[in-house]
Length: 242
Length: 317
View (tube, rainbow over the protein chains, first blue to last red):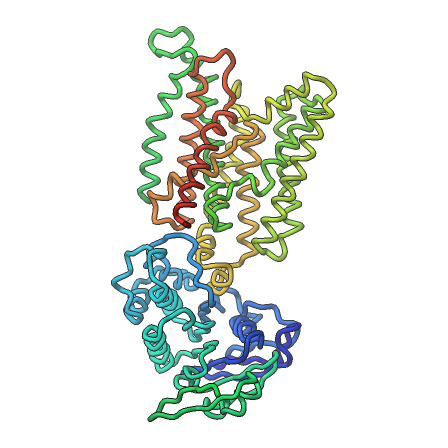
């Protein structure tokens, strides 16, 4: 199912943003601070009341979905890793089944396995490291078997090893047909791991293309107001500020 | 059913018969004259009422801590208990105590008023911060009006009655209070139990809970109704009994997997146990006049709260 934003307007945050996202791919949303990235992601997840415009999932307006129906289709992972109570990890991951109202264990076990956190299943959530928590919370999203995963800066606060591991998991999810939308600050990760990059600037769409076009040095210079150069090594690119 | 429920139910089953026998006069069912009458008409209703009131306080405390995601939350924060107290104080102020029904009814009207005010202010948006602030304002408004009533009491008798009543007690209660509060508290606990799944999802924060399909408005209404009925009915029949809602979830939490939904029923049982035991203790204490239950529980609760803060400070440092 396609996920579309049609002429989205949100006061002071988004101005007439239109997007059409396809499943089975990783889309990165990039932009300077305050560009409206998180707002766009929240709107795509159906969690914001927009001033005008609409989000369309499949052939229906997302606003017409029942909360549970929407939750079955879209898994959302915010930037903050809030875990208020020291519950066992397995119970947290099981929350992913909530939209389905079932107690099926296979998706929960599969999600724990996919993110290499099976061995943590009986640990208490607040005893985990930052990297472990990030993986467990993504496992919670996967356990819901959503068609779309929308994650806000899932790589923030992770070391490079965990960042790459998480990107690998997300790639696997995309290859299995899930639509993955990530807000990313690290432009090199966006360049190397996304199939498509959406660049927001001041609430408007500055670019929406393949990574090497959307994040071309001149776009980065214009939007981020920083002189940069891309360094190519094999099939990988690294961003070098000048 | 989890371990905490079994433990608390077992303790309650032990405490209930003991509390029936305990008092200024210890009852030996075989030899005490009129034992059946004392047990059936005085001690049993008082014990059942302690269970009813305590269960409501415990369940409401657990649900509040889950909803506000804060272990220091207390049902009093919602302003429902102060609202109910204001209703009762109004009845006492105007001397509307000719019928035994009037005071609890006024208290229920006060609780209902506080609930309605909360619903009007925060009901539509369902935001937790707004709701908490609204609750605090309702509480401080009701508190100020109560203080006003005390300071303007028509005579010293009314004033002392108000002050005494505000320090809750279960003295001289009968089956009438049980029938008044019991069904409401039970219904309130059912509402709070229905909020359990939503409270579990809130563990991951409000945006995630909404993304999981939790209708935060419905959750708010369940909380308002649940806390309103349990606390409103409790205050109506027993006055203000503090700290139970704050302490009990902490005592129960280590026995559960710490999910808010798993805490509500055991907290109801533990609250029942705590109030039952405390009420038995105030009956036994060799004082000239019976120590008010509300004072006794505050004497117990305030040091506990301080200990909790000390422990949290260590954890944060």
